[in-house]
Image 1: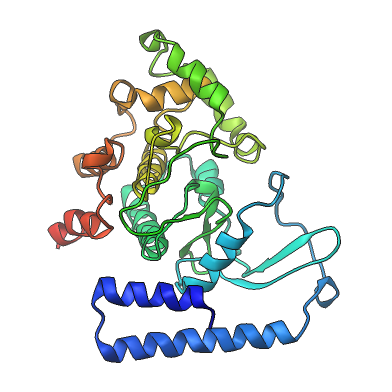
Image 2 (image 1 turned 60 degrees about the horizontal axis):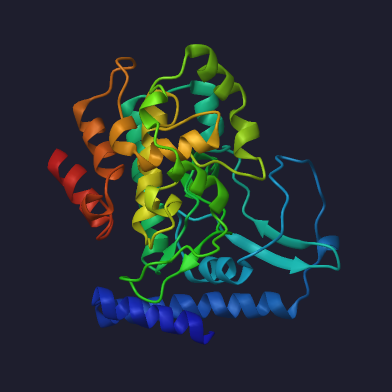
Length: 328
């Protein structure tokens, strides 16, 4: 058992005041995982141990970063809501991550096929997304890339969170990250956005033709090397300090897209998207069609809001208490 995992477990035990019997069980589980990891380490796994059957998808190509954080998270977080890493190895050319196979596709593909989801279906996926995000926040990680492409479905239709390449660890639960020379946003695009004051000149609703074009380009935008800004919180774009609460903003934008058919601040111009997000008070609106319940609007508005009043900022229990207990 490495020191990192032991320290993380001890911190969790102290913060959650877990009973001694449960502490012992958690320690035994961690020791079992470490034993299995050491067993796999002794047996050298390589590309020759696998047979490529077919290509199931292609993403953007770029330099591999944050590998240590991703490995630590995958080793530390034992949750059914997280995509599991079975093996990792490298050769002279590539780094290989062998993940569990999830045949259900991703939420982005589902939205492209269905256009919108019913509130019952959206509620199910939101609940499982909340559990997944909470499972990494418990270990003091920020995902920083919550979007429909990274919400994957297993063979039974349950949702799992994937792609931890942009995860960042926090030293403690009150820490924030400062975006200096960060890899999430372009300083040039943000400075241009902040320098333009004509926000009211950008129409809130784009013409149907532009919306259809955006939907046709949805997958290309998602897998471009530039990435998509649609789900990024304003405090991230403004290069202010931020913490786990930025992941809850992203989930609010996804919920909006599930019910409306497009993200709340979409545009075919990234600079306009940035401008809309930063000025979210002006641009967060709901169309007349499709009809959305007041309860759904309320949750979205409590996720797409200032950090100080954003649900989840003080833990996922805020969301559970507000929208699960109250309904029972």
